[in-house]
Image (cartoon, rainbow, N blue to C red; front, side):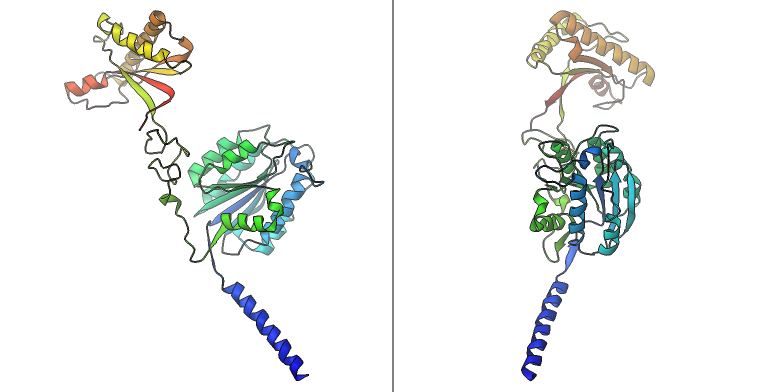
Length: 376
């Protein structure tokens, strides 16, 4: 009897030690606020390919499993649906029990709902605007949309304004869905994580997704996105608005390729817009170059110095730009549908207007080649 008591006590001590070990393992959160957005459009009522379960029911099941894996680290958590757009839980301190009750409210009966996914994203803005800290939005959808504003455009605006990390759980399949759209949303910020419902059928994969999105182990190095430059263009990920810029292109302060702008050395007499003979060869050379870029849209921009009123200079620059455009079309057969003329007046000086030399530099014509960018 005494031996039995000793064995039981030993087992209790082992169990306690294991529990203490788990409790002692600490985590640090990667985000401060998260909102899960569940797509309830008509296509989510269809069975997920290879299963007899509707996409919406499978989405709810994944959320329930995910909820058991998220550590309670003081997140602010919300839950919304799209199609129709509904807030099932406003941002509140996360607890697994409370969030489970909110997940239970996700309806799995859908019917033939339209797909305004963009509207559902747009309705998250008030919560994101009021939140402080790092924001994550997790979208469960098959990516289909057939009404309302495009979701990629809406998501891009939210990513820029509120630094949102978008994560996607895809229900797109070979039968229905738009994986390209979901990938585009995920890639809006480098912190985005994308996966699929099929992959998350495995608990280990789901646990990894939760870790990638929500937390790191205490003491583990946490990558600072502002110290990273994924496309190696010299602009860190936090401010880079053009991810994956080709390595050979020069970029601006936002990390975006710089359009190729060619100066056209054509000057005009005072208050005139007719092209003098001495500049015919300059325009002939430009036309020959333009013909080497078939299909390229070219903007002919006219610029002035600061003498005269803003309104006058704007009209003068427009007349001069149109004069160059018309000359190129009439004399060299350039495609008029690919040539535009825009007057910028004195709004874009490249030199000081306080000197004769500077004003001469500002009285210029320039051709911007759309889709052609400066090389490093």
